[in-house]
Length: 359
Image 1 (tube, helix red, strand yellow):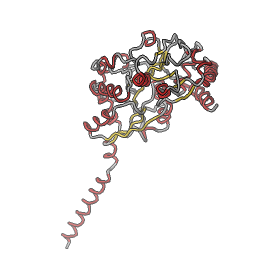
Image 2: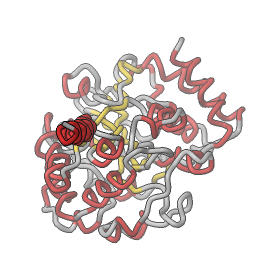
Image 3: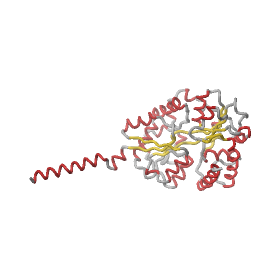
Image 4: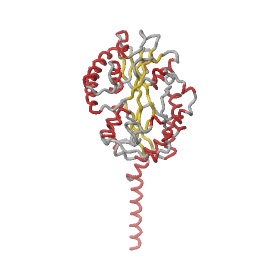
């Protein structure tokens, strides 16, 4: 009888252990998942599935609408929800200084050297501890010469009353305020409240000419003929060229500097799956994986994105290299500015942006 009781007790213990394992302890949950927060229509599903097949890690992707949303997710405890987030380069300094990011172990990124030298050890992240670049985007002015009533050579031309209701544009304060600041002759990353106030007034004057503000599909109205001018990322311009034909649109050869933004992957502080995040970054940096991703962007989205992975670019053919949205005049490509962290002035931008959007 005692022997029977002992057998029953052992069996009960085994069942408890099995039940706990089946439910999944915290370790099994964290080692098998990766949660990403990024732009939509910006990465091949094959890249995601290829990583899942290679590693057995399940990837969950959620999508953002603005760079500000990504930064807000990180500063409000993003590590509780996400393991990788995609803010723009303008936000990185404040995120580092605020202690909102985990350090990235480059020993786990054996494909790191595929990045061009210009995208390593940058001023805001000199040891590459916190941010890995994914893709880059120029913000162009593109217009249809057959329907646009004027030739556009500078940002000030966008205020022309003849363009009323004719401009489709990306949104976001750090995309539009720099345009206004450059138009006024100021630093696009100004922290001067008076200059930012003048930029707000410039944007007020622009608003009657704006048909739509949408960072996800700024090109749609241009393609459909609902607008004759677009302020848009190069990938969106590429989609417009693909839909309308290479000769249907013109990239404005502006005398003003254009914006070049870099979308970065960072690991939020407290991320539950840091090693999985680093494994994903390394997989993404593989030259062939990124080349296949760039080709998917062209084939499925009609988007040719500027890529910091030089090893991947070397694998691409002329369809990519000579794409109209990438093969732009040198005068435009080399006359650019970067988004920089504006520190405490971000509050000033926030206030004016909120005011502008509520009018």
